[in-house]
Each structure stands twice: as C-alpha cells, then as structure tokens.
Amino acid sequence: MRKIMFTACLLSIAGCATPHTSDFTHAVPGCQSATASVNNRAVTTLFCIKSIANQPSQYQVRVNDQAVFTGTDYERVKFEKAVKEGIVNGGCNELIEAKEGSTQKPMMLKDLPLELVVSCHIAADAAGNSQPFSKDAACDKVFYKAIMPLLGKVIPVEVARQCTVKMGPQTIFDERFNF
Image: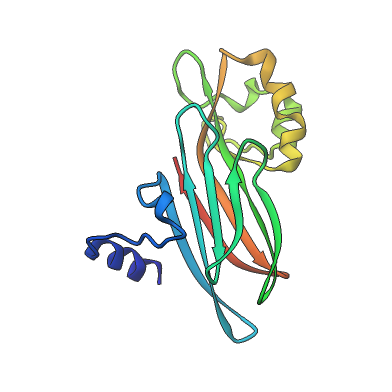
C-alpha cells in the first residue's frame, strides 16, 4: 500500500499534499502511511515528521483523516486521543548511536557507563562496538546523567525515530523515520 501511495505521489504534479498535510509537503524525513484492519474496517494512519535545524521537529498524525496529534518533539512525543473508531495512542522513540568524539566511529560498548548500557539495552557487534539503541522512557531516566560527563568523548547522534500508533491494543502503524 505504501509503495502505491509513494508512486502516486511521484506521478502527481501537486504531490500528496492535502489541506491537512500541506505544511509537510517537502518534510524531511517525511510522511509515511499504513493501513490496518480493525474490527473488519480499514484504518489508515498518516504520520509526518518535519525536521528543522536547531529547532524541535514538527509532527502531524492523522487516523482516517482525523487529527490525533499535532506538535513538536520539544518533549517526548506521546499522545492519546479518542476518534470515531476508538482510542488512539502512540509516540516515538529516538534511535541513538553513541559515537567517539574524535573518530566518529561507534563507541566501544566497554567504554560506555554500565548504567547507560543496561537501562538503554545497548548491544554490541562482534567487534565490541556499540549498536544504535532506542531512547525509550526507561532509557531517558539515565541517558543525560550518564552521557553528560562523557560529552566530547562520546557524541550521541540521532539516526532515526521509531514511531508507533495503536488503536486499543492493536498496532496500526509502526515505522522508522531515518534522519
């Protein structure tokens, strides 16, 4: 479905802008959509993120053309709203890569604070390099405290956002936005 929508957008001179998404027509990392069946009815989610240099990113989330979230990531993106079809909730987690300040290579896992590694579920590759990790709510509690003393030696770099939307218990959108 997403490929069809993407192809239709490319073929359209006006793009996929609607009155609701016109601010996000040239958004980077962009808009993604997904359609799921909930109680035998199609539910379409449109999730848009517009990254703005040195400012919080802007977000717009629509479910069956009903606005469920419009805002920024000045604080953690998390929302809940009642729509015709039910209760919609969702949010995004940043995917962070810890890089060495001098080389921009991934930090060795052994060089990161244990509290950070455990709370953020940071894994290593076969060579011992740290892998990108999800900065979820549990990670947030220790992230800044653990990283601050290492800033300069360690540079946290956001590489993507993983965004999820649920209607009741059912996931209706789960996509990654790469930065």
